[in-house]
Length: 278
Image (tube, rainbow, N blue to C red; front, side, top):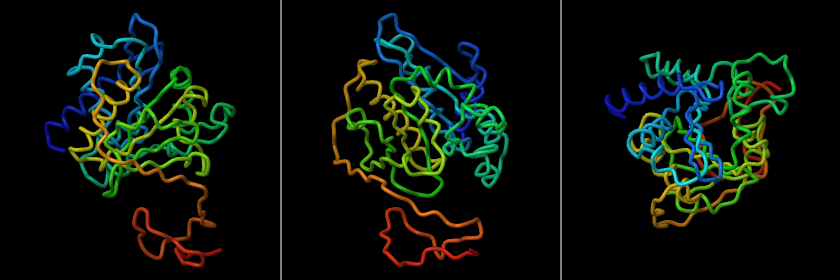
């Protein structure tokens, strides 16, 4: 990511953070006079993942979505503005890494996020504020990036099909992780748990290609829903779906991996992967 890109993203963050729709800050909405689906594009669910701001900039100022939306409604939502503000306020790389969240990972929200009023953690309170926006979504794309080098991935919620992501320039699909992880991702609550929802890991947090991939996938998503008149990208690769059926939990925080494991590395019964007290 070069200096110009960084400046644009910071400017877009400030603009979107100050945009308000129906009393909710951090939201920009585009409405077509023609009826159609309601789509959410959510960005910076983690404060140190700025790629989604490139999609916001593109569709607001380059593509000019307000003039070209064919039908329905599109919401761009800044999910975690306080963590995003922390990210753009520090200069060191280590400081930006620590800007992932304030109190709780927004992709590990408690199941009763909207039921208990005693939980005052920032991300839980922000989720409650966003609920009236999230519940409108019929379809949604949640844009993420990764801290370690890896190929881009699509994260498909258990309830979602594959048609809308078939033209994404991403070969790897991870599905069903929301059914087995600890806590729920913010996107689990979209559409009152009924929306077709997809996450994308577009690449490294501060890699230029991550910005362009966020734009390309958002464009393909809206085109697949026929909200914009754009030719769908030609399908150029076979997608492989990895379905998650289970997970391993350490007994407590004393546990550490015996070595760093590679993405998609095979594991075997009886293999030692971590040591700790317990």
